[in-house]
Picture 1 (cartoon, rainbow, N blue to C red):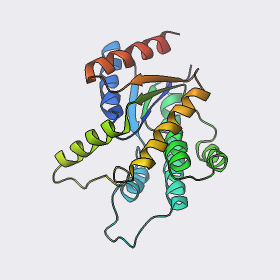
Picture 2: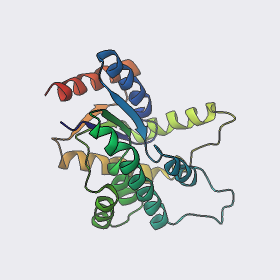
Picture 3: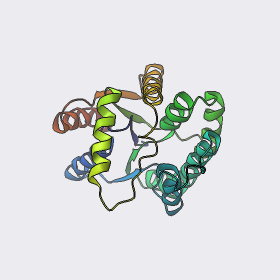
Length: 216
């Protein structure tokens, strides 16, 4: 049984924290796993991540939406083939912080690029790989951005990955609506989690959904 679990949501939803806590949960259960993230997961992915998430040094170096999309897909193509597929073949649970749904939500609903074109490009990038379970951490945009900016402010001495956080509020609202639309279209894969609750409560919800998935 393939066990590919993705964690999705808007900025500041707490998914990265939940990936880490879920790894601890699986370790206690003796379940082999890896945790990874997008963009990232590989050497190439980490270099692309710096381009995508950090604000450019010059305002004139604005990245086009199309270039942004292609960079995400390039990082994903490498990620799938170098790390995700080999780990799944080894029988490991793969916990991934963002995957294809993020591209549809951000570049499709957020940037306004053609969603069907994004899906075709993503299939090429992933070879058709889809998550088996997707946990969507949902909360109001204003709450998420407040959390995200507080986190960034606390990471002193580290290059800020705040390019998306600084987008207009309407952009983030569109991204959230995009995620909810995706979840509504695939209820068998998605589990929507109330991310406005405290960390421990959210982790209990995640553990409950994951236990049902693994024991199925």
